[in-house]
Image (cartoon, rainbow, N blue to C red; front, side, top):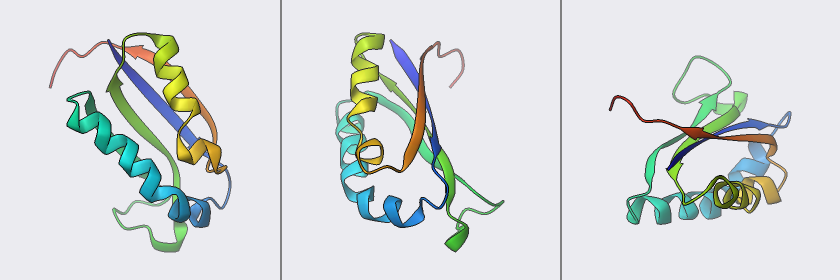
Amino acid sequence: MWYSFVCHDVEDSLEKRTKARPAHIARLEALRDQGRLLVAGPSPAIDSNEPGSAGYTGSIVIAEFASLEEAQDWANDDPYVLSGVYRDISVKPFKLVLQ
């Protein structure tokens, strides 16, 4: 089943994000390579694809897992969680209707 991950950053997360980004992206690329990633990306803090020093306020990921528990475990092990970028993540089942 598909699951949505709505992630919210802590304040002033940009430096932490920059350091943890390679490991975070590697995990997403692994899901993509397995055909289990629908979409992933950050939410810029300003109305720009390149927010510069304004940074980001969070991220959204939609990926496929065998169960909600597996999806939550994957989220808990994310480098952005482990390095303190995300203050919280909401993981919920997602029904893909249109693509």
